[in-house]
Length: 256
Image (cartoon, rainbow, N blue to C red):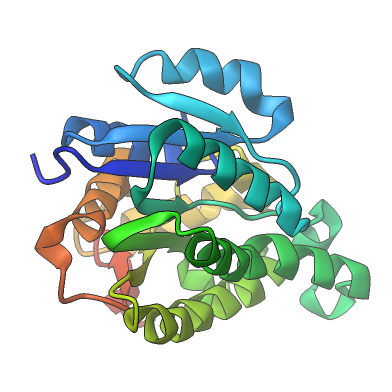
């Protein structure tokens, strides 16, 4: 088991269909102690879900645009568990109208909100983790992104811009945290039918296109993304940092 005796924090679990939940399951299967965070609104549902993983815990994380919420959450986790070996960032949000309208119509407030929650939160989490001495030696941070950061995906709009900022942040954070021996990587997952995906216009069409054009002719699963995450959290990936790894059945290599 590649994560034996490691403690992994999975941030952003919402329900059993979320990518974060796939990461939590894979981490547990690989021997990790799993610590999940979720919003207050999702707590009861996630608490029941987490009971499926032996020894797993769940903590409430308030609005990540308020750094004090991240600080309080990390302080509580550290007090209960000590330092951790990995963090999975699966946090993103945009207003529905800013996803469904043309990108040019994105409101200034909507832009700020989406960037703050979806991209800046990774910067805040990494900084606070270092400031709070939250990470064990050799710890790894993994964040989730999507192909819409690289190419225009109809209906993805503001979130594509946020994911582009997230990917750039991964590289700069990898450089900054490398001085401390910590790694930061991203996984560009293929489209998955999650709760968040429901906000994307014509999402079913995106799934169909991947199924038709990807070299493996199928869509990726949360389990497959979770397994790739476990690898990046493990010592098997010790020489990998600042990378964006596509877990999309090869869709991103294809031309028109």
